Amino acid sequence: MASFDSPAPDQGRHCGACTACCTHLPVPAGILGPWGKPAGVPCRHVGPLGCRCYDRRPAMCIEFRCAWLADPGWPAAWRPDRSGLLCLREMLDCGLPGGLVYEVRSQALASPIASQILDEIQRTTSVLVTIDTHQNRRHLPGRWSAGPAEVRRMAS
Image (cartoon, rainbow, N blue to C red; front, top):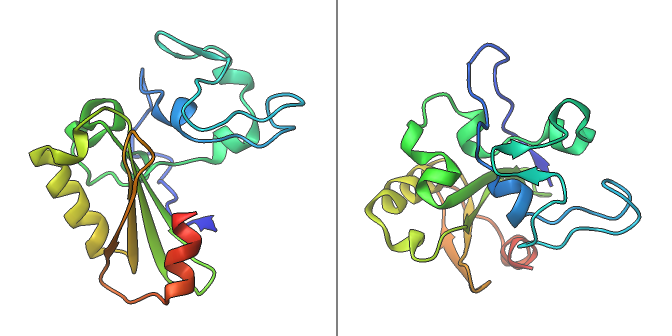
């Protein structure tokens, strides 16, 4: 899956102290060293104020854009470290957009702001998968329909 979020270079959004992707997303072996980084484990370069090797970070990190970073219309309160939700929009193999929402703070998926975020992601995707802090997955329909194989692939 390839991300279809590409921020405008002048939109003025920055990760700041948010390190949700640095902790909650896996990194394949060979990117940060000979071993991969599993999901839920902080990257060895994460510090209290963000990435300690920001100027030398891998291309994977440079190119990555969560939905908040990529969409200047998303409110500041939706930033992953503030909302507790790390949102990704990706192009599925079938050519339709899909969404993944990782709960990075316990009970964030049950918050009022989560409802707004999920509505926005569902509005712009064919399928949405939420993953809570216990790695439980839930599939929600989006605006466009995706086949069962695509839903299974996103859920794995």
